[in-house]
Length: 473
Ligand code: FRU
Image (cartoon, rainbow, N blue to C red; front, top):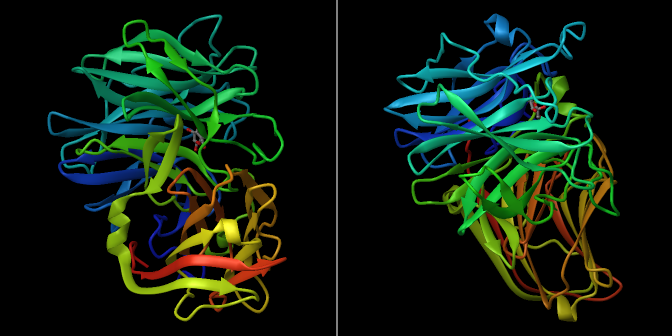
């Protein structure tokens, strides 16, 4: 029996084994499907399979059998990341066949794009003509790192963007392809390339339309730290711009982060039937310590986040469907707090906490979550610098450290915090910023404590919802 002490109640995770990137996030015949990079044989990364879950409502997920296994010579070391699309009632998966590093480092790394399809969305067959796209022979494109195809439809044609880098390994870049039938693909060119400190290899690129703009969401490797930004092993972020489908060129602004916490990588986006762009990421980070490996599993997905553009920034907010997970509600209004305070009914292993702070009349403060005798996670606000931080220095198990985001000072601070057995995701000011982390508290650590520092904390309103179960235990 699996020890469930850190197993999520409503985030997607595999029943057992290792997961990383979300893959193939799509709608097929009226239901959402999500696949993920999967190593079912251990809680460590290994030759990749595609695990599979589906949901009708983006909240209650059910496990399905493994969709792809590395069975063919062109994918002998793994079925790497990719995407999915429905065409003529079939579900197509476009993914990277991987040969070489790190499973067989003595082999030359070869990455090609491959196709699999299904009549029922459950059992997949590999296309006989695989691979369908080989790395272009070009002195501007590295021949080895060529992966993570993301497919979409636009004006009756199919497009796909693939992660790449320059041959000298100095700049990440996104390659654009076009197709009439998902099988034969024409290379349109290098859509955009890293400039300055934007990464040396771009993984998992996604183009998606948000509020009339073309947004490129991607996961660059090798961005150097800048102040309190880019402190994790890898980063994910976005550009806002315009994609010219004729030339394949993408005109865009500068790189911005999607989540300022410790654990958020390889986000994938899908477009719902009602036109929303929804993103799910791996709520973990390469090279991070993952204590749940001791329990035979590793890795969870973020909650689905809806994308919007406001003030030329990408906002990420929990999808509205998540409200259906709410059970009991407790609200406290107009509070003036001058010492560490717990509020009636505001505590739990999981839950959704809404906090509306009157910043104008408050001093610095901390909210402690998953707090217990031996541990706590600090959510810290510092008034003078307008910095909001997640601080794991109070952890008794698992990784520590602190991540920060610089806010624009305002009179109010609105926090929406999702707690699960081993995660915390904070959405600030209606999605202007997000900051997330894996945490590993004991099940007995359930307190939420409001701690004013150097003065009073004035709360306009605090609401806490207990949340139901979204994934099989
Ligand atoms: C990103 C990534 C992808 C690759 C996959 C392998 O986390 O490195 O580029 O396809 O993971 O599991």
